[in-house]
Image (cartoon, rainbow, N blue to C red):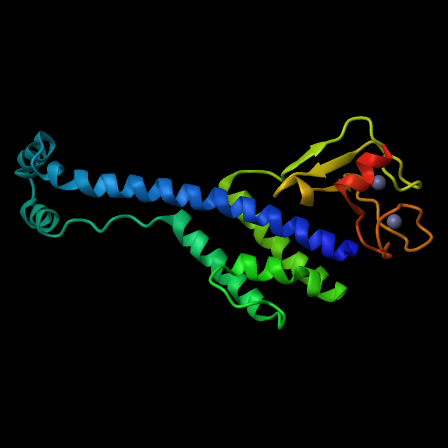
Length: 215
Ligand SMILES: [Zn+2]
Ligand SMILES: [Zn+2]
């Protein structure tokens, strides 16, 4: 895997975790909306409605009240579910742009499955799309990047060597990666960073084992 492929895989897992969070919110919201819909008919017979009717006697309440009783409000929209649907649609579009993506019902999986077969430049482009979507979903659901500072481990890039190494923990442990919060970039084969397939200009990223074994 080149660094481009590592970034694509790590970003795909981050997005997958964010989408799971979003799906959970959508399910919870669907349950709330269903509960409200069940409660609605009871409201029409509640004392509150009687009071409303009495107060209305001072003005022109009758048409309004009739409208409420004969046309119950539509259930409110589940904005989490809408966002989840939109996100999957975007991923479906993205998967369709990749000739090597397999068919299948899950657009995330179609992209994830084909990452190792992508050209490095395509992997970099896919990473940008996935990262945009990941940021968008995480901002909406209120969860930050899934990463932890690794105490006392210096950046393997000798020109950086800052102790701001983070492990990215989305997805199963075997796909976790390590990045530098100083955002030091690779200068290519002469870099000395030990990044597999060092590529000039790419933000450093290492498989977890590559850094933790060296430490
Ligand atoms: Zn660094
Ligand atoms: Zn490097």
